[in-house]
Amino acid sequence: MSQELNDVNENSRLKKYENLLIKRDTVKKEAINYEREYMRVFGDLILKVFKHKIEAIKLKKQISFCLRYVNRGQEIEKESLNRYIEGEMAKYYGQLDSMMEQNESVKKDTALSEYDFLSIKKIYRRMVKLIHPDINNLTEKNEELSDLWDRLLSAYTCNNLKSMEEVEVLIYSALERIGDDNIKPVIEDIDEKIADVEREIYEITNTDPYMYKKLLGDKEAVEFKKEELQRELEELVEHIKFQKSMYEDIKKRGGM
Image 1 (cartoon, rainbow, N blue to C red):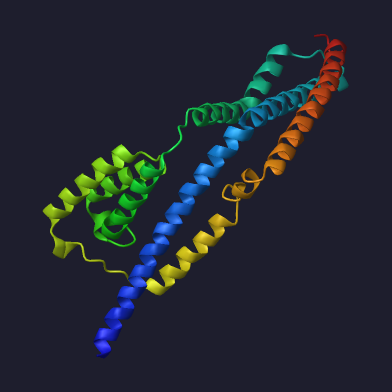
Image 2 (image 1 turned 120 degrees about the horizontal axis):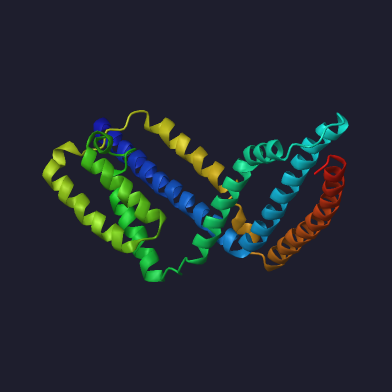
């Protein structure tokens, strides 16, 4: 009887662990979706603000560089200035390219039907119980299973039902070749792992981008955020005008 109780408790903990893994991956996916929705709503304004911030940073660096020459009574070396600015601004332009790419990407997103949403969820739950690396230690050892898990996770994150259906067939085929005796879950320190996943879920759901959910669900908050970004943009425009005037004056003093 004692062994039977142990088996029941073990199965109960395994079920809890499975459900927590599914919940963790679900909130991770939701966080990605909230971030994309945030960019759909605010992306254009955020991009404009960032472009102006880059311009302000560039002008500040140009002014600082030129002042060093002027303060020493030397003529500004244009080529040296250009090389310096190119090196200093490379990372900012890289960030800008990434943001522009993301902004364009979210605009191409299509709405997911209720049927597709439920189908994706069901397939993912079935496959987690079979080959999730934290449930089935064979997944990391077997190259085919590892690849199929990565493909499933990618399709799940991208809401690609067709790919998930195809990968599910391949997973069942792979497991059939491997044999049932080789895929029984062996999970050590399961209570610690349960606690770790619970902490991870808490951290995800209590930080951005998951926390964007609250903002996006409040129309007044959305409008306030847009107004806030617009004010920041207008302030940057005025600041840049001042910087440009200063920069032109310093260039004249430096012989440019």
